[in-house]
Image (tube, rainbow, N blue to C red; front, side, top):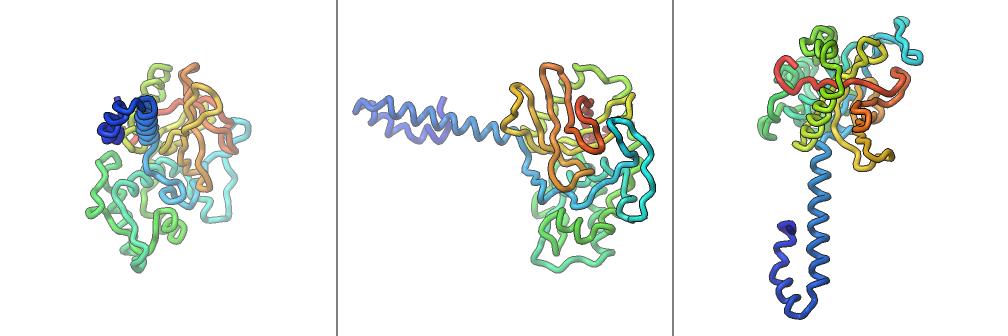
Length: 283
């Protein structure tokens, strides 16, 4: 079946048949259908989240230092900004909340600290799983073009008003890592991830290798790559709060029925289990 755009070509196609040029028109119809399918696939693979606009400009610091997958306590730092740790869940949740409930007005003057803090809290007190607000009902942040610019200019104020990190250790949904460890549950998670992106939504994932301590982390998945060098493997772009400089990659292998995460200074790389968070109450 042809796309709606291709249907508009029906009258010319009738004339083409009369003049025995059907073959050329059939090719046009087929190309229109391919283009529509390609566009649908692209829309089903990503939200409109942009890393250079919608991610925070500052980094979350890990509590532990990692050496080839082994965790050890990090030495105290004299630099104040390095003390901002245990906030990976908070940063992922807040990035999603700003995407759903806030808008920016760079043409207006920035707010003072008290007013800005109050507006940030209005955003972060909304349920992260709620439907996005219409544009004319969103909380306005004047003086900045996007979240990245605001979080760079007002870093400490933003950090102080988006929430504490320690409650993430006591999330009820964390218990899933102890009894939902099988490949079947990960297949279901992979299906939910693709379904969320197909709806243009974001997917916040809890990454763990429990009972090992090689990773205990949260990332925001926002796009599936259109091309993967490994046939059959699906690769996704994620916002990792530990790395505000560039996107990271999470992969799914149907062969092993498992996720894997990109190697880095804070993770040895490879196998992780993924659990969706912030898609409903108590999750």
